Amino acid sequence: MRQTPPLSVEIDAHADMAVSKPEFANTLSHLAATVCVASAGKGAESLGRTVTATFSLSANPPSIVVSIRADSPLAALIAAEQGFSLAMLAEGQDLIADAFAGKIEASKRYLIGVWADWPSGRPRLLGAAAALDCLLTASIEVGDHMLFVGTIVATETSTHADPLIWNRLRYQSLDRARSLPTQLSNGHATIVPSKPAA
Image (cartoon, rainbow, N blue to C red):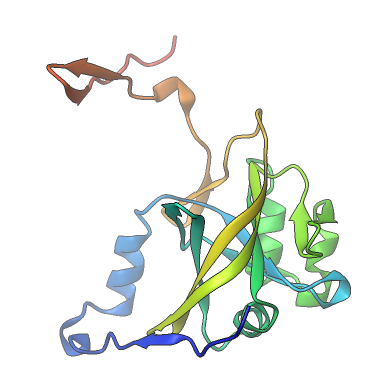
C-alpha cells in the first residue's frame, strides 16, 4: 500500500469555551469501555499501549478505529508498518492492562501474558476476550492524537471470556446477573429492569 500523509483535522475552534481538563477527565470516566492493548511491530521490536479509545467503524469492509497519541513511538510504528493488532482484554488480565499503561518499561511489557504472532508478525495475545489484526487503511490527526483506521484481516474470539471494563477510573466486570432484558412492544424496544439474582 502506498503511504500517503495523514489527514489533519483542527479542533481548536472552540478551545477557549471548553471545560477544564479535570472536568473532562471526571465526566469521561463515566464512559465504560473495553480495555484493549494496541500493538505494532514484530518480535523484540514490538510496541504496545493500553487503550480504551477504540470503536467499530464499518462492516463493509470490516474496519475498526484506534486512537493513539500522535507523538508516541507506537503511532510512528503503526504508520511505518501500515498495520496494527488489537487485543480486547478479558477479566483477570488487569496486570497486562497495567503493564501496557506504563507501569512496566516498554521492553518488558510482552513478558506479561502469553503472546504469539499473527501471520503478519504482529503480537497476538492468547486468552484475550477477542483479538484482531489490521492493515492500515487511513489515518487522521485530530488534536494531539492519531485516529488509525484498520481493515480487519484476522480475528480470534473466546467463547468463555468476558471483557475487562474500564469505568470510573477502575477495572470492572460485566454483571450478567443484572442484565436488562429487552421486550418488544409494537415494534419498539423497551427496557425492563430485571430482579436482582437470589
